[in-house]
Image 1 (cartoon, rainbow, N blue to C red):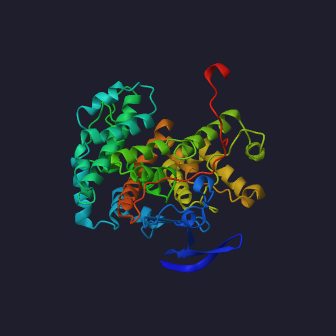
Image 2 (tube, rainbow, N blue to C red; image 1 turned 90 degrees about the vertical axis):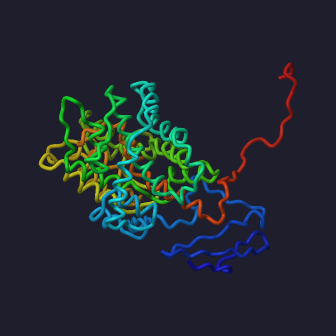
Image 3 (cartoon, rainbow, N blue to C red; image 1 turned 45 degrees about the vertical axis):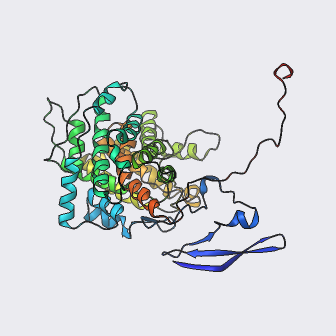
Length: 431
């Protein structure tokens, strides 16, 4: 990186304050304001942190103007074509793709640590059957530190393989058990015979009366979808993990915070909102023209889910992959599936509509993932759980990266106060 200590000046009245300009490895520029309040008495006002860089990170790069997404320098398209999810997890957390012996070692460790402590099953059984799977997931992830307290006694960086395999494997088991609890099914143990994604699907869908075998196409689809969700810079849930981690909370607590942040409809719940929208369009018999008109009407509460993104101002590169995958999973039925046809027609109409073009509203990853999960018979309430499974390696990587941050300051944003200046408390009888 290039650091120019005389790169800019801030003028406050008649005073000039030199500002350091940092040019990152991709040419992006930022102003270093770490001493701004100390030197000037001013803070910056930036709701939603739209223009604020909270850290330096080498994990993920997004170029929203050109539709580029890279993990550790690798294009997302390249990773999807040549790697499985476990390899990408290794890349994000340890910095490099594994070689063949390392890949075998990971598979072995994921198998070894996939079982849950027997007492954790009682937690599952005490949840109401109608409980949302994300409420179960976040609570169970937080409880892992009670069942595996040794994480507090060792440096996770020195024992990173154990930490990774425990979380990656046990969170997958928790996710599958959440589905079974929701459906009143007894728990299905993981098996050494299956790969990471095969195991998850088998733990979800196997019953003593259906002789379930994971569909290779569904296994492939799950691998790709988990890779697409594995990281995305300083999004809401990743920022939550880093913020909680900055207090020196343990990894399980920090990841549980990420799960809670992801749960929101504006973040991990967006793909569920897309599927609900497509179902509404189909069931109500709405035309594409009516849908677009409703989405443009400011007085209409209807929102076109799956379009637009905080970062991407062009087509989301993940959405291109998801669209192709969607057609592959549906196969010969793709032309018969009403939801996919509505999605394709919506995309075509929106991409030729000046209203959407001027506002850079392109399909994002959520636009097609819900249809894929639906085709795989995964219920809508589980969509965000699968998002969390995919995002887990990114959360771990960012938590570990913070531990190397030379600042290591607890996250503590400032505020612009808008309340009353000063009031006196009146005695109770005079109020």
